[in-house]
Amino acid sequence: MIRILANDGIDNSGKTLLEAAGFFVETNKVPQDKLSEALQDFDAVLVRSATKIRKELLASCPHLKLIGRGGVGLDNIDVEFAKQKGIKVINTPASSSVSVAELVFTHLFAGARFIQHTNRIMPSEGNAKFAELKKKASEGVELQGKTMGIFGFGRIGQEVAKMAIGLGMKVLAFDPYVEKVDLTLNLPMLGTQSRIKVPIQTVSEQSVITQSDFITFHIPFNEGDKSPVDANMIAKMKRGVALINCSRGGVISETDLLAALESGHVAFAGLDVFEKEPPVNMQILQHPHVSLSPHVGGSTKEAQNRISIELAEKVIEYFRNA
Image 1 (cartoon, rainbow, N blue to C red):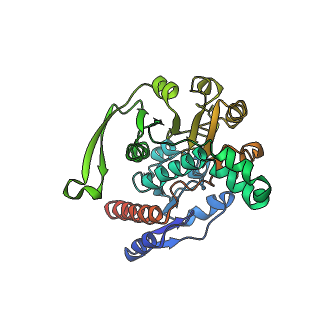
Image 2: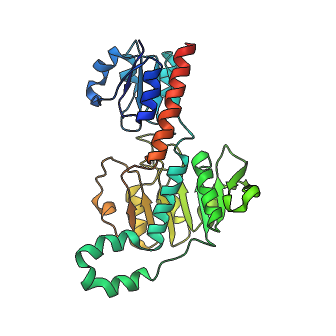
Image 3: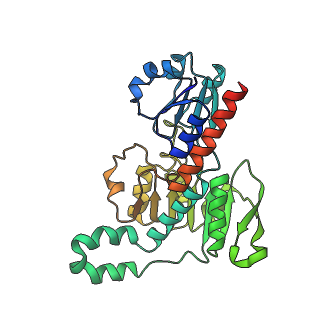
């Protein structure tokens, strides 16, 4: 019997599919430092972003045949070494795109209308500071008519673009591997003409950085690398820009972001991911112009269901054809 460790959990829909195919699925989480020993008894391991599958771990697991990542990125897996060992690596790139894109706009709306700030102050000091908060929050801005910069134009970036277009925003997208995309917008209120095509031509990195009112980042990042969004890049942006990171912790330098928030060069930021998780930079966590979420970009009920089904189907297909 094929034995699978779903170390970061798996939705019941996917677990049911795997078990119906005759696989054993273990969902009790094994601590990182115990994985080497535990994986001796499994043919496959399924993870999200929490569990790290590095070279040292893979070298100690001769029986492992497959690694499945529920989500888009593979930053927490040593993919090249796994290939060298003959271990198949799969992921679910399409299943969580809408969920991540919606969270981008959750942070955008919160920052643009000071929701993250008023939600912190009103419960404790609401009455005393109500007039002051109202005055401050009245300085909020609309998204309609503004320029949405999308740095990284893969599946998630394209979902962000669809939503931005629906809000009446101009879209500027940069991706070194994507030249042009015909986006399909689903507008059921139009009846039989509910699906329309919108062509998007990508632009230069410089254009996105210098011309956007809001910029969201959807690029890979490996722990230990230098943050691509640093003081030098931020200095080239419009004063009053807003930055959103729902991709990988470390893409934006937290130190440089804090300095830009304090100077007013960055109006607000929305962060779902952090350089260290759990996050340790209290100045970022407590800043009135930072909207926060605990790394849940692809973790809606709908996305979890889609991810688990896609992952299960790929696992079943692999072992049936192995």
